[in-house]
Image (cartoon, rainbow, N blue to C red; front, side, top):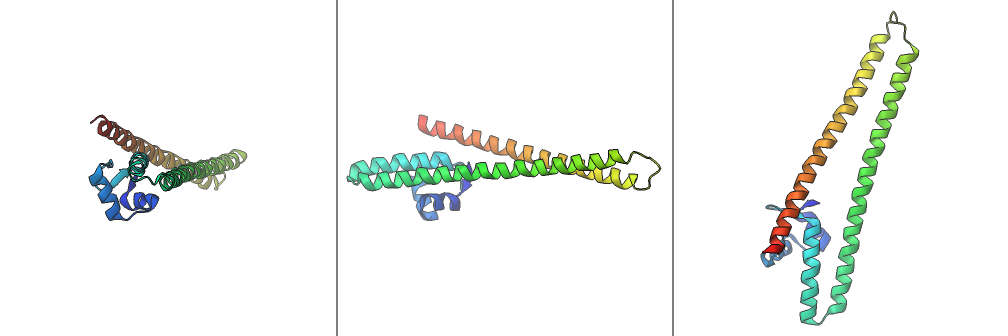
Length: 160
């Protein structure tokens, strides 16, 4: 997941300056002010374990690593919950569309003046569902591209 400096700083319990210092020490960055959260947390964990081995404060480093892993899991859970909410919204829209279609089919008489209103409502509902699906597909494709780029740059950073 690509995040801004402020989100990464909050996750690592550091300031923006602390994040900049870590970047100077070799932490991977996606672009100016953007970071791959998973890659950065992994780098931070590995870096802190190495530093703890040098300083002898292994217990504190392990506590911090555990805290970071827990926080990462919480962020991933929040992403899953957000996706579930989106799925619930799709389901609600589809249920509304089904109800509108059902009402339109129960009044098939073309002489009814309300038919135009029903057709308009039906078309508006269909358009709204199509727009939401198209927007979400665009967002998903864009975030997948960002993730693939960040993973590729993280692999290149490890290979160096």
